[in-house]
Length: 324
Ligand SMILES: Nc1nc2c(ncn2[C@@H]2O[C@H](COP(=O)(O)OP(=O)(O)OP(=O)(O)O)[C@@H](O)[C@H]2O)c(=O)[nH]1
Ligand SMILES: [Mg+2]
Image (cartoon, rainbow, N blue to C red; front, side, top):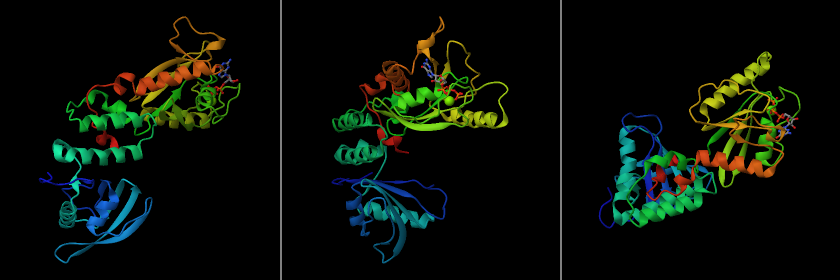
């Protein structure tokens, strides 16, 4: 816990295990890294660069460590480890006025504001989605205003603004999965043909869905009697599906949804090629022939991953916990 009068413009967090000594230790610094390195007496490392640096301890000791500068507001310090060395580095960080990154720093109103600025800068520099900017700035400002009600229910959804979520399509062949990816991406990223079995391997693209950046994976259609290459590709795709935050489970008016392998994320049932007709029990339908329909599906995907309710929570999002 920082002492009275302590100014926090940068924070540290020990990322390597603190109970066992590894060969290399890992400590992250966020905030004003230039100021922190200068107070540690460490020669600067340019943003994106890595350098070997000496750190002088008060007792004439000299430690060597690799400094990796990830961004303006974030750096990794990697000393040779061993518990004694790690304790020594932490002592030097504290002597240099660098506070510990964690709940304790935030609960001290004298340091909260500077700590929040440092965490905000780190979160903004890593956020995948443009939509994150307003939300992060608002939550940081709530911290500064002293709001203390954390709302953990939407934290997982909001963290998708920082770490891009994975979306995967799953359906039978020839229902327009690849066409849909191209329409959502607004460019040709996956091959389309009026022939079942066109997509042989999964194809990924980064999509901007009204401010939410997602990694979207198109997969081969699932059908009985597929050859070895196609079956292998489907097996690989099942691995992608298992990791996905959201699965689009597709069919069109003339096909059935294939069995869904185990998934950890949400599942959205989608009826594709809707301009050619839809079933009576169709739910969310889309036609890639109509840009408005594609946009509506994009918004539905965004809503399933980061619901409006999560964007509008009145409480507080502990956003620094999403920084990995
Ligand atoms: N009318 C209409 N045709 C579509 C639509 N989407 C795709 N198609 C056509 O349907 C055929 C199959 O499209 P693909 O996107 O290759 O289908 P797929 O599901 O990726 O097929 P596989 O890769 O074989 O699994 C192509 O001829 C497309 O032009 C749509 O929304 N409406
Ligand atoms: Mg395809």
